[in-house]
Amino acid sequence: MQDLGDLDSLYRELILDHHRSPRNTEPLISPDVEVDAVNPFCGDEVKVQLKTSGGTLNGISVTGRGCSISQSSASMMGELVKGRSVEDAMRARRAFQALMKGEALTEDQLADLGDLEALQGVKRYPVRIKCALLAWSALEDALKRVRA
Amino acid sequence: MKTSRRGEIYDVMKVREDFPVLARKVNGHQLVYLDNAATSQKPRQVIAALVDYYERYNANVHRGVHTLSIEATDAYEEARAKVQKFINAPVPESVIWTRNTSESINLVAYAYARKHLKAGDEIVTTVMEHHSDLISWQQICKELGTRLRFIPRTEEGLIDLSTIDEIISARTKLVAVTHMSNVLGTIVPVREIAERAHAVGAVILVDGAQSVPHMPVDVQDLDCDFLAFSGHKMLGPTGIGVLYGKPEILEDMQPFMYGSDMILEVSYEGAKWNQLPYKFEAGTPNIADAIATGAAVDYLENLGMDAVWRHEQQLTAYALRRFAELENYRVVGPTDPSLRGGTISFTHDQVHPHDLGTALDRLGIAIRTGHHCAMPLVKSYGHAAVARASMYIYNHEGEIDHLIEGLKQAEGYFSHAGSRRS
Ligand SMILES: Cc1ncc(COP(=O)(O)O)c(C=O)c1O
Image 1 (cartoon, rainbow over the protein chains, first blue to last red):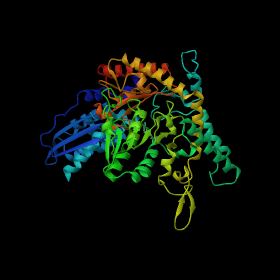
Image 2 (image 1 turned 30 degrees about the vertical axis):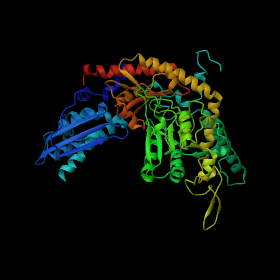
Image 3 (image 1 turned 135 degrees about the vertical axis):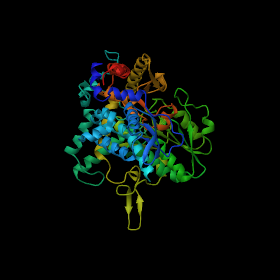
Image 4 (image 1 turned 60 degrees about the vertical axis):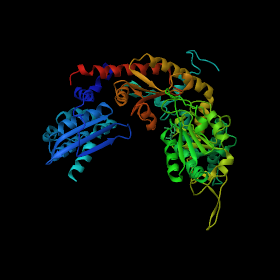
């Protein structure tokens, strides 16, 4: 696989692992909010369901279908924000967006992202950035509705 | 028709020399361009026609008495005549320049359907249309209260004509069908559909975006009332397309856009429309790209459209044989090469089309992935996206081998990935 070897910077093992076995896919029984996001260019889909109490995301379900980048990002996102506050989730979203834009992140911001740092390589493949951000746009919508 | 030393219908390697971009390297590999259904590459002759116009006789058309304007007008009209002969249209004025297939279809929707259709009438299309030939009709139906009906497909992806007499009925006023599916490669039996349409007094529009570049298309033989296609998929530049219409039908239509060039006489109170085709070509047209489309037609005629089609049929048969060797890849669409063109969509049992596309790109192989502007069709196969390799005059078996090898590598990469260190 020598020729494809330089893909390793994009497809880190952690990404493929989340793609193969996505986390938090159990649908919530009665979610407070539910948001679907679709990337019209490729048809990739992500559904985010949230349950909150007192500003904390104590229930999250993330499902969908699509490429390894969109689905691993969705899975890692669910893992990251589960049990955290709405504020934390918003902050993580901003940090992840900055990562995709190629902006320099502070230590704190990187720490906020956990496993998602594995998606760093995506920024070198501009057409795939939308894939990585799909789940986050659903989360952002969902968070806004939680707050409203 | 001669066959060259490699068993080819014409010398593909010689043809390739005319396409500067094919010499390019992508990510360190020789480019293998297999995204021709999206847009084709352009030969030197077409690029030269553009440069020649801008360097030697750039001027507006139909408005000047000076030499440059006369030369530009002559070249612009000569290109129209070339297209006319290419599709065997009866007269040059039945060929209208537009921006692309989409605009050609919109022109018919606005200038024909809106005038001639009313609530209760039916428009018939197929389940394998490009969004360009679906959304216009959906909108017309919303606006006029007409009903949109669909000719179904078989499991395999061929057009199913068994219920055509029920679907195309006395209520049908317009039929709009693609000539070749841009996803499945399926050739649609347009002549049979046209016959049925005319038997009930309906007009038929053929979306030739994927057929006109690849096979001989004769509008009189097909007996279609309208034919829409794009220059950029047939070696020509972007930004130029064609609408062919039967002259008597075009005569009876109102203009689609208003402005200069499309009028004969203007007073402060009103205007008299110009004759065909200018009635439909408001404003300064895309002169350079029309002229270069004429050069593209010359290029194709020089090879011969029979030869182009035979070359693609051979290559498609070869590619389908090679695909059949792959265990986990599945072709979406008909597998009999005589019923289809060289646009081959496929999926892998585990690897997502996008990931395949990115992997192939690392190897210099350009394919397209996604829903290919035919979302309902791709969905009907249970997919949100498929990968698509589409061929043209300059592709050869060696490139198909690269594709197959690349697909094997991609499969290996994604399935062995579990043993890599992160
Ligand atoms: C069958 C078919 N119809 C219509 C179109 C639209 O062509 P254009 O984008 O040039 O208007 C395409 C091109 O993608 C096509 O394949």
